[in-house]
Image (cartoon, rainbow, N blue to C red; front, side):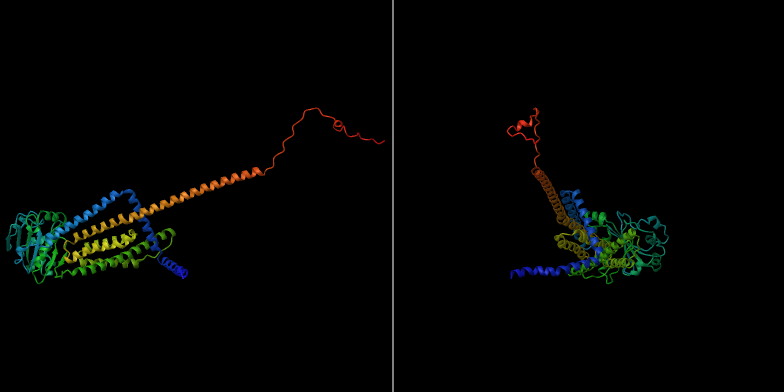
Length: 495
């Protein structure tokens, strides 16, 4: 019974083995370039890991890993501080004009540092130019210690306001937004606004004086790292929340347009963020893998053409399909994030993570756990963006990427690199054992040859007969024969 049971696995293996080998052979015949690509990338990764281990000692690796973690924690602290300072509490920079801004016109909000005079326009205008106008425009001014508001009825004499939009590209240091309940007002040129007598209220904010910009540390972060775009949008959003028609926003410097909508921001929105994250990540990963394979196939065909002087067919259809798919995917993601830059960087992060998983993850621990950390950090960005309507999403994306980068370095240092070094040590031990065995075999062969030669010499020495010794030469005078035969009778002679 036990013998039969012991034979069953062998029989099953004998039956399944050829099928498995046949299937593996068919897969290799179907996609031979995939195996070549995987082996090439694995060899490059192995070589780079060995070079990295030789150049940088373990102490430097620990310091580098700790530095990346510290940088990620610092950016997370900045995000939490900015969120607590501005997102949780409403921004009341435009509280003075909540009831007085023109609903049938345009509200223009701008940032001016160290503003001292009222009515001084931006860099394209001067107070002297305003005084050259013959007919004064009807103007309503509201003063505050830090808030400067001017309400203007644009007429034929207010042509200088049109120069604000027609003066060319604005420098990136300027922060100007326009808000209106009608989207068409923001699209009109300044000359058309003058003809239609559309009212425009100009609000000037000073970050050094307004209390809505937070304390000194918050102002330093806004001025040096984050900028004032989110502050302006949040201020206008506070006005839009009181309107039935939420209205539209235009960034004068960048030319981007935004629309305020009412969104359901409950805690259950995290589920929607998770579903969107999975769909975007899997779609981008699939498209990038397919495009990567098509590019690799084209390079291999090109090398074969140069080596063998053979013609190849350019894979125009697959490459065009991949390009159009990626462009469409970026457009869909840009609609969701309301920013093309954020969509591009998310695609780049997904591509880097996909390459790391395919090339660098070889141990069971890395394959099982690294993707979980990646999805956790990536979902944190999606959840924050979806929950707070994209506010400070760029800083949240940087935070997520830094934690993903730390997870890559951590798994490489603690799992992949030790496995590679252990494999190298095993190979060196096997090579040393093989050399030792080869040396022993050579010594044994030499000893056997020497013993065989010695035996042959001994055998030859015993089998050879001894040579006869030569007789000693006698120098005495010869003796007659008769004297030797004295006892014998003399010979008889017949007559």
